Image 1 (cartoon, rainbow, N blue to C red):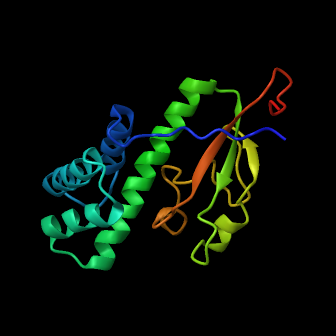
Image 2: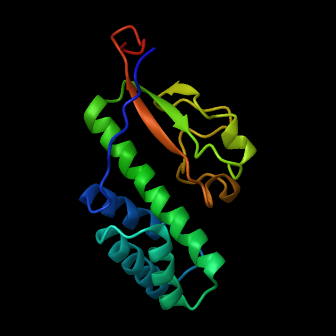
Length: 165
């Protein structure tokens, strides 16, 4: 069995920062000022390597929202930006031809639709059992991405499309 590879992505990385900008720009139902303030709050925390809880506090300070809501926003946006950046890094590192493996947090809070994907491998762009092409897939339903803590590993393949052992 091939050993999965995970790109270690520092959130100070410009790719991660651009992914965050793209994610926040896509948030619907907020005006430009709120969007800009949200981007600044999350980006500042990511740039300092802060935890999700610390970034949630930044969001609370800016938006005067609840702790639960700010945690949901922080976890969702930071993990989604990391997923987007990972996707870019995987393609740069392995090209378009590689496999992906869905990895959950493997705890009691993983949603059932993600539990069924844990450890499943697909070729890049193919769908996992839950219908997504990757964790935090842009445009996926909120019930699949909000508070998601899943990641993907990359698995290089040979010319025949088989995982490299």
